[in-house]
Amino acid sequence: MFDRIHQRLQRQTQQQRQRERLVLNAPPSGLTRIGHKELVNFSSNDYLGFAQHPAVVHALEVGAKRWGVGAGASHLVSGHSQIHEDLEQALAALTQRPRALLFSNGYMANLALISTLMEKDDTVLHDRLNHASLFDGTLLAGCRFLRYQHLDMTSLKQRLARAQGYCLIVTDGVFSMDGDTAPLRDLVQISRTHEAMLMVDDAHGIGVLGPHGAGLLEQEQLSVNEVPILMGTLGKALGTAGAFVAGSETLIEYLIQFARPYIYTTASSPAMAYATLTALELLEKEAWRRTHLKDLIHHFQRTATELGLTIQPSQTPIQPVVIGDNTTTLRVARALREHGFLVGAIRPPTVPEHTARLRITLCADHRPEHITALLQTLSRLYTS
Image 1: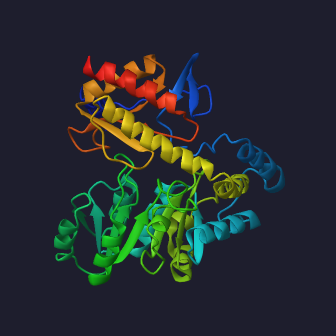
Image 2: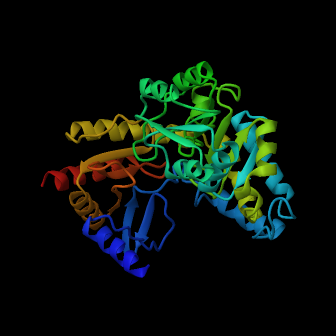
């Protein structure tokens, strides 16, 4: 077996796909540090800067003293504390769903949802660029698996014509590598016409989009009747850790009774739940962060266009610059790091072949001059 392992590792390196872990010596928000070098961080999903917000940090300390650091058991044994219950109710209220259920992370939430709801004679229909956890949940379910072209509703309808059993349409809300958004109103109409269930993974929309930061579904004014299944994460815009599913009383109770990734794991940290409640309060009290972030997005788009850079028309904090080949993408990312900018180099299989890219993410801790300096440097490096 180790022969095969060594061969795969060698091939990964030869194809310029080898992943590496950077060791940061400071919090990973707007400004960070690797070794002794300070960097402007354009690779974090801490979109609102809550991960090191003094109030959130203080709440984690208070929560640990009041509720403990670890839960000590699963939610269904003795690990479900009042603070978990309070957070679930707050998330249900934010998303305007009857009920919410906490998970340790978004990956586990997606595994739980799809593997629990679907059976072998059913069909799951995926946008081709959905997150890996959504595909893995479908594989775990062992049901039929069809992918439609990215954002292409004609392609989806064609796949639905071949579907069998109960059908579940699954999509990212905001696509994590492209920054574009799903056409939710079209998906709602198609799901109703074809009597399919609709599930949205809004990991990158929660906290950022919508009048109150409740995500893409709030922005599009879609109720639980139109989008019955919502998954959101707490470790991105909210700055803490964990995930949740929001939906009807029936959906949540079904997951509690039958979702193995929920039943057979230790409950998430109660101290973190306390900190997340504070982040939700800040979502309302410091709405200026979303406004500032929106201004930064416009500044990025305008400046990049003025510099002649080819960008995507993303209106979210995710701003990819597609380069194409792995070698050039890695070279540019490393050169940017030398110039004081931390940017992720994303390569296949995370993105489709020949679409390796710089995944630039903006956050409320950035200033316009950070973005201008990044883009001016990128323009010089990429054209040289």
